[in-house]
Length: 224
Image (cartoon, rainbow, N blue to C red; front, side):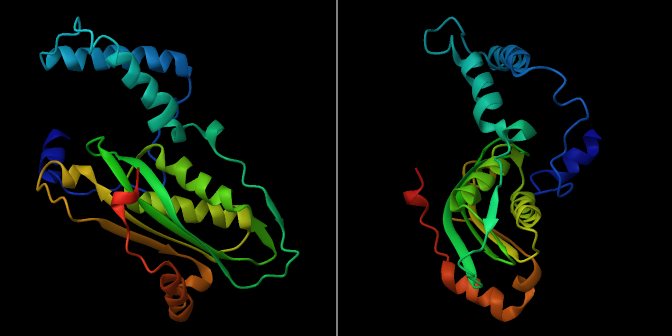
């Protein structure tokens, strides 16, 4: 196993469209997870030679542990999944609905470094519609876990397809990976674009209409 990981090096490797969770992932409480992670972070910092008696570092292990469980990786817990209530399409709106420039804050599962970007999501109603904020919330939910961008893109589409009862859903994500920007090749200008097109969005004309709507030119400076 170690040799295989060494051979991968910095390659961007994904395993499946589902987040790889163990069967016992939620057998212990969040409180217990925070306590365990706190001790692990403490060990890491001590191993690195940091002085945890320093006022600036005393609270770091607990802060990191709480941020992992409650914020950065809160999307691992199914209990935190937003309820995707749908409504009858009483307006009889049959064209494409696009929610663009949804901020993405995620974490690369290979180096646990930030992924920051924008998601653009669209669907064509077949009788049901969903609240606009729910599209933002489902992106945020799947982003708040160790991720690869390809999986995140697919999970957003699959979740909305299930909620809306239609295959006609699309998602494009443009994001910077700090595992590329701040380490390794240290290419600060590059970003990664992924897409998932379902149903009617597989048609070239429909897909082109969606891409024309978003006119993707991500302003990373505006993401704060």
